[in-house]
Length: 122
Image (cartoon, rainbow, N blue to C red; front, side, top):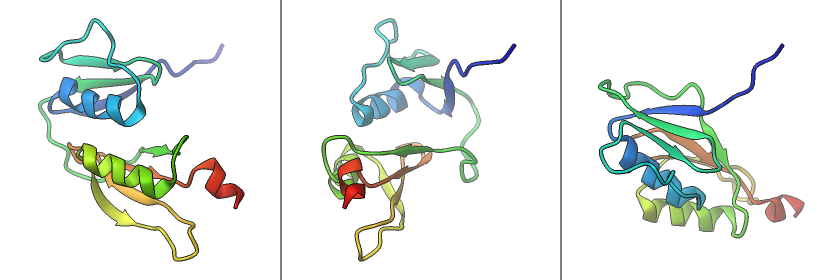
């Protein structure tokens, strides 16, 4: 027998608010049964489960998400995510157009934005 990943769980100070950011970032809805104040909030179709915990984030994530834009460039996606409330943590983009950007969500969880498939084709 083997196991399957059911959810990727992300601790947060406010599960519903943080799930709202990720819902907009991914273009996927928050589960219809969830409401503000819920301590567990699921994003439909992404397998991301946000849990409210009392502990604050204190160190860099050991696991993070890598996002690849589907309908825009990496740089356009970085701009969109910054407008949603993300912050730029580390810019690893290179002058030749390669590389990635490290961002943090509104609660400080790091994630990367890579080049789109079209950009990778060159």
